[in-house]
Image 1 (cartoon, rainbow, N blue to C red):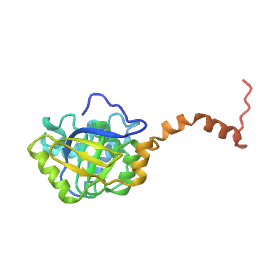
Image 2 (image 1 turned 180 degrees about the horizontal axis):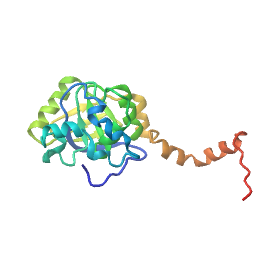
Image 3 (image 1 turned 135 degrees about the vertical axis):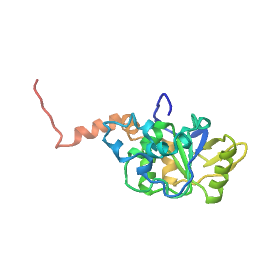
Image 4 (image 1 turned 90 degrees about the vertical axis):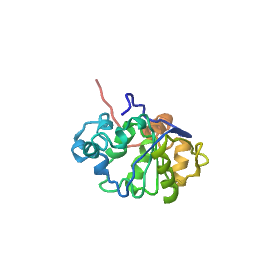
Length: 206
């Protein structure tokens, strides 16, 4: 897990980083973050608990625990990743471990939406392409540069056209995925609308 967590804000145009691979279909949200960790008051401590049960079972041999995957930030997965219960804690935990983007064969719809809402782009590639990337990662480190404007991922070994929903791509390029930043940028309009609403009138005399 990374020592310092810095959340993404505003426009996301490019992402670069070392890849980490999780092999297997239908990896669900309960595996990503077990239910007992959902009692947390905030998401800050979830990074250290991501894939907690899988990591205990593998006793240090889980990809997230391998030294060569330290500081990895681009996750490579197979099909139907993030299926199961619709817990927003799953992408929050992955992000706090250090994941900035996910490339896979396919994603569960709610998991995908939860990722977009916190600034984690989820891209898809054909099964063969994903398997080629995963085989490459087995033998050596893979560093990818992702260009969201052109949906292109490139490295010394690969050059792929990534797929992502056009609505999601536009949100990242404009920064509109970041609801908080969008509200702050439009503070004057929000204040104006607030004053126009007849049912929000407070006249306190302190």
